Image 1 (cartoon, rainbow, N blue to C red):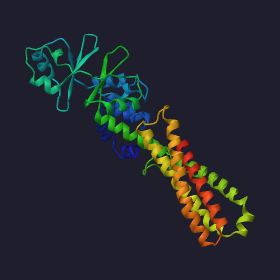
Image 2: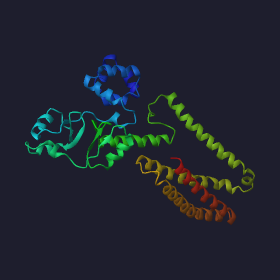
Image 3: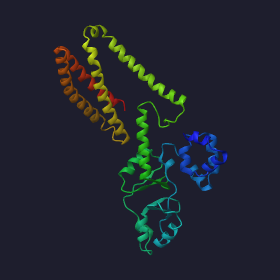
Image 4: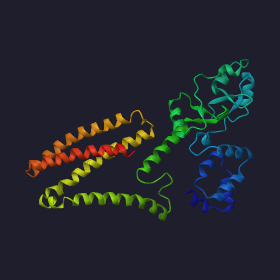
Length: 336
């Protein structure tokens, strides 16, 4: 979509558009735009933005340091409140919630609430206002870990430090919320064979190729199911009721598997699955599958037996329901 819009712009309009980008926007766009446009955008960056862009590129795509907001208010840690107020007044503080304190080597020395700074005694030292229990984040950790830390934090933003404890920037709750949503969407789309780059406006040929692969996999599984049913062709020919009841068994298993898979995808997005609780989770899902299997097997088996006046047929369908729902729950868990 971005490429199609940029193609429709004149050269002047394109340059005016690219000139408005800051370092974070360019980092985000870099993987989805042609190289020549990215190079032109880099050439239009202001020197300060270009330096921040180069610093971000020192980190891998999944590392927090690449996406940290580097435009933060950082002042010396050993000055007075009065001096700090003068320095902070030079920044754009419309959206600032915290002030970061650093030493001469740019190392992080604490975090101060902006409101506390405005109301403090001008003669006091700024380091006396440092907030306690502030968690710092390493620039080298994965985005998922940073989102988890932000979720557990009592602060609206957290500082990001490099391996030398120097202040790199910050992440706030808006970034964490946006990243969490992207992670969830990525995993949700992966379940259908697509990725986050796919959308309704993607080129027809490109979209058909990606979706075609998943349809091909689905076709193979459908053929496997058909071959399995074909092995019992003689039995089905003699007991026509089986052909009537088979879709019910398949449908019940499909719903049970989808329920488990949906819960697993959600748990993955919230990072609730760990190596310590995997066994408990699978035991829980199998237990749920067993209870629901027995319940609905009794109901459907009784209905089928009365419908076709055959207790044996009812028992066969009941057994199929139990096995299918438990198997669906198992594979719904394993699919994550």
